[in-house]
Length: 455
Image 1 (cartoon, rainbow, N blue to C red):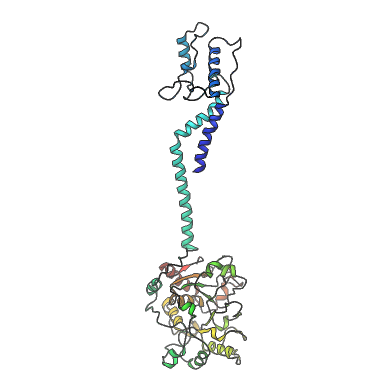
Image 2: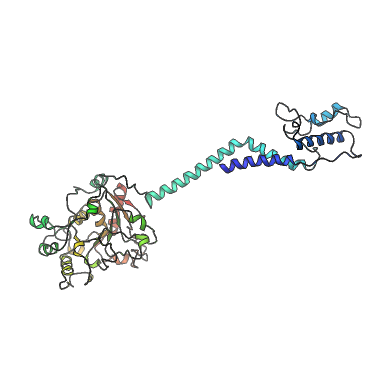
């Protein structure tokens, strides 16, 4: 708008300068006589007055603001028998000029046309000024609306706007989770502890991974060397803003690292690396959920010094492997679908055992799986969906990133951001990824979780 205003005044100034420096008409020669000579003399005098600024502009002006052509004519009658009245009639048919403008040459002067162009342009713009401003305002509104729609689309489907850290939606997750999870409660502890399972003699209804039935002895020895509490820095938070970071290919080249690091609690999965991928996945890790076959990572390199290493037990052999690692006993080699690491440099004070209750909730309430399944057709939740369920029972705000698998027809697309394996590798697993995708989309529709990368 400023450019339009400056351009308007600049055009008017240019027009005035053009008429101020107009050339002086030539004197009448012997060949120019009568009316024409008188007109040139009169115009020359007007030009002199225009140059010096010592007189009023030509013409008293008519009611419409234009100079009367009769005032530009000499009082003498023209040659060849023309009377003064005839001269006036002839001159009245000539173009008129706006009042207040110094005229420097006759209508037959070849330079008069170009000199009038700025004046006519100014007059035209002056009459259409309202329309021009209206069109300009409409254009600006259209541009703003287009940008607003694009930003809104991005917020809803790709990178939602982050909530202000000073405001916390306390109670919102609990309220919405109760609509999706039957008998939702936050009374169950996150991690197993001795007093809840042995001193009080609380029996478990299910075997692993949904309970501890039949694994009490080895679990007792394992819990005696591990801990169950949360760090005070997390426990004392009035609002727990959590980010559950999946291992999906969508994190590659996402530049989400800085955003992920801003959350109070960052939950990672299995052997997903951090070192070398900080720009896309961040560097902060509050909890890392894993099981023995996925423990092929350096606990000190890929985690922070205070990261909680949360064991997700799927079978009794998982307890035995963890006990052997922490007590430096003879390693267990059988009973795994993939050989777990035999050397694992972890601090026992950082190790936690996840409460199987959350595996039960994930399977029964979100995936509608039976707790007792035939051995040949067993289905289990993935660690990723389990981590989201855990966050729903612990956090006041839950955002996810790096979730989702490629379309089943796309067999060449990698599924992880850090390794070149495809969806074909999931065929022999006990996970139903399409079923889990439906569960996560239901959470998104309810506003229970929000997505940082498109799902």
